Length: 115
Image (cartoon, rainbow, N blue to C red; front, side, top):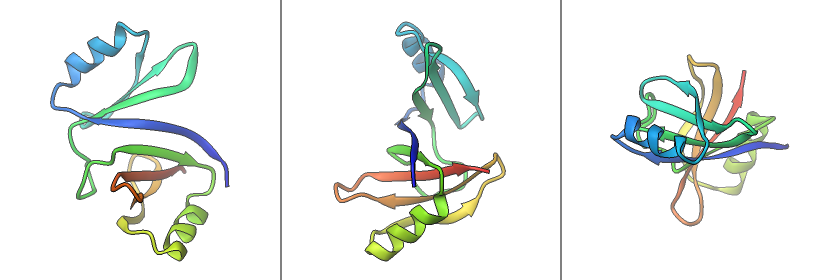
């Protein structure tokens, strides 16, 4: 399994202000679903940050997202390890397959793959 990118998720009710702030550091909006907005560096597109008011289908807002090339293998590995699955593996309408897991520090990680 390979990691494609890691994105911090910032819980915020100030999306516009956050976009303006990170614009000053060279980020540009690359995705906006209303409840989540992703900003990326034009010169290094994998350098990203997401601003999220709340998660559309999950009970919690994740602290970070990790995109992997095989989300089913990641899910199996986490279940086998006994890690706490916070949100079950499922396909989302916006084109990702994902689950949430809690890391040993209590952080909620959104593990996803694009379909």
